[in-house]
Length: 239
Image: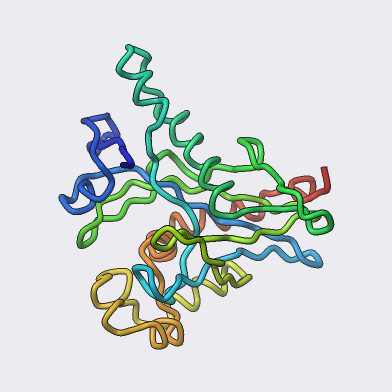
């Protein structure tokens, strides 16, 4: 069971709920959005995922990330330790980055473990909001600079079995052009996305609601654009 904090519009803690229950009842909860950045011959590209055909939003493009869940923090809170929202969100982002991206050394295959210094927060906590059918979220955006000696091998848990995740490296500005050139139906209605099917979703460059909440909001898109440009060459350098 995955317990997640439920918050109000001011991001004040209102309680806890099991993840599926929170989504079913439209309870506002916290998530992280992770955007891996690679540097190739002086160009900076974002790595996006093409969602598995067995998942929600089949074959739609998306960023990475996940829910802000509580583990030891839940028990600490019960013991009277104050609830530290930024700390909880950062811990969740680091956990998701390591679990989802599976970054490893290109030469040795050894894991490249990510920590807080490898993630750059974009905007405020919970700034990327989404209110849709069956999903009310406040998301925090993070860039993840992929070091030159490392690469990612994302995996997704589908009914208890891990499967490789297909990815694409795309220019950030081009990604938004793709978003705007195609009428986006998938992010607004996941049931329609499922009925339309994988082939059409992929061909028409449909986006899941994680990526869509950034790409449709010019201010958030511009914040991410500036943050990508603001990364230094040292962020991609070999350790």
